[in-house]
Amino acid sequence: MNKQVLLVILDGWGIAPNTNVSAVDKAQTPYYHGLLKRFPHSTLQASGEAVGLPEGQMGNSEVGHMNIGAGRVVYQELVRIGKTIQERKLGQIPALKDALAYAKENNKPFHLIGLLSDGGVHSHIDHVKALCTIAHEAGVHKVFVHAFTDGRDTDPKSGVHYVNELEQHAERTGAKIASIVGRYYAMDRDQRWERVKVAYDLLVNGVGT
Image (tube, rainbow, N blue to C red):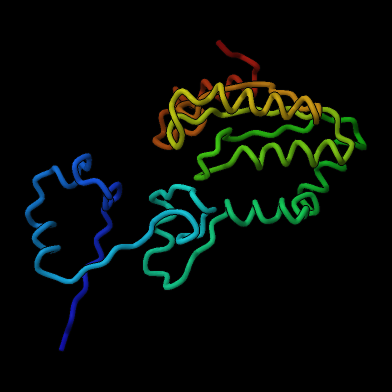
């Protein structure tokens, strides 16, 4: 017998514990709800340790796509990097170790560029702080962070909180925040070059607003 199976991924579609405040349950979806009534079904956990993220960390489409159909937990980079930091092995990665050694020997600045938040999709602030600590322990005294604030995977108004958190950590390591720009400009992925130019001019030419 030829049996066919269709895998349908509905991004943002979830099973809410409280149906009274669930857009999915309030919507007119007769076909979807008809399937639930007619056929056996179950649910999957799409966040935290079930999909290779830290406990309590929300999932996202990328993580879901990597895990569904894999038949096992696919551990994410967020977990792997965090474990490397806990085991104090991050500073032993050859590329990082060589870069720090070069900066120290030649009295060069060490620049860190990336997303500053705890969203956990593209980055985590704990990793940025760990890199600042590693640079400090390596004897590199000119550490500059170029922060991209995150209004997509975290609260749109949370940028100030993460900047303050990093500044407090920088008091112990000597790192400095050299520039700040939103991911709206620095991480555009739709070829909106007028946005990217704002971030480029800031990082390369020191031109800001």
